[in-house]
Length: 323
Image (cartoon, rainbow, N blue to C red; front, side, top):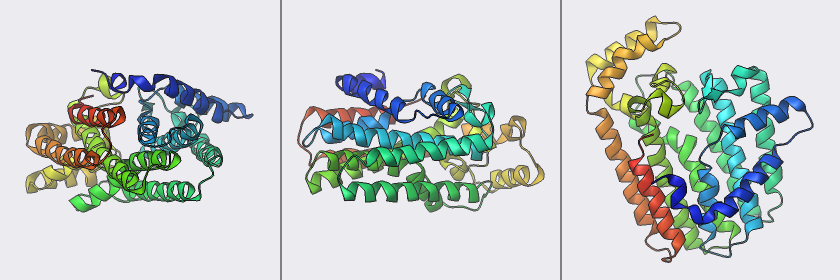
C-alpha cells in the first residue's frame, strides 16, 4: 500500500493546503518566485501537513487554523532542504536539479531565508502565543542540528548520543512539532497534546534512521540521488557508526577521509560494501523498531478514532519503508 492511501480521507484538505503553500511562496521577484516554485514542484510526501491534520482530528478541527499551521511547517521543512543542499553541495533533490545547482549558493541561501520568513508570516494569522513560541524553538533546534552536522562531518570519533541528538534536531523535532501544533490549533487537551508530541518525536527518529539505512540499501533511482551520498558528504549515520566499532573499518574510514581532499564514489565504495555486508544495517533497523514501539505506546491514551488508526498505519508504513 502506498503511504498516501493510508490518509486518503484527508485528500481534499491536503489539496487546499498544497494550494496555500504555492500561494504563500509567490514573490514579485522573478528569481525567488521561480526558485521557490521549482522546489515545490519537485514534490515530496507532505507528511508534516498530514500530521498536523491528524492531530487536529482529536480536538476542534477547523481547516483554516489547521491550514495556517500545516503551511508554515511545510515551508520550514522546504527551506531547510534548500540550505541542506548548499551545505552538502547536492546537485539533485528528488531526482531534480537543486536550486544551488541551477542558480548558485547565494540564490539558494536567500531562497531558503525567504521561505523561512514566509513561514513565520503565514503563522501570524494564528492567534496563539504558545504556538509561535514552539515554532520559534523548533527553528532554533533545526539550525543547531545543521551546525552539529557540519561540525561532525568526517568525524569518526563521535558516539551514539551525538547521532541521536543530531537526528532529533534534524528531523524528529519538526515532525513532533507538526503533531503538537496541530493539536494546539484544535484546542486538544494538554495530555493528548503531549501524547501526540511524543508520537511525532518517536516516529521522526525512526523515519530518519530508516532514511540513513536506505542510503546504503536503496538504488539511485529509488533515492533520487546517488547511493552512499551521506557517507560521501562525510555524514556519520547509524550504520556507519555501528561499523566504526570495528577497528579495521575505523582505520580504513579514517584513512580515506584524511588522504582525500575531495572524495569520489569510488573512494568510499569499499566502505559501503563493508557496511552492506556486516550487521550494521540490521542493528540500525532494530533501533528504528524500538522508536516505533514507543510511538505506538504514545497513542494508547488517545481516543479510538479514525485519526488514531491512521497514525498507527503511518508508523507501520515507516517501519517497513524500503524506498
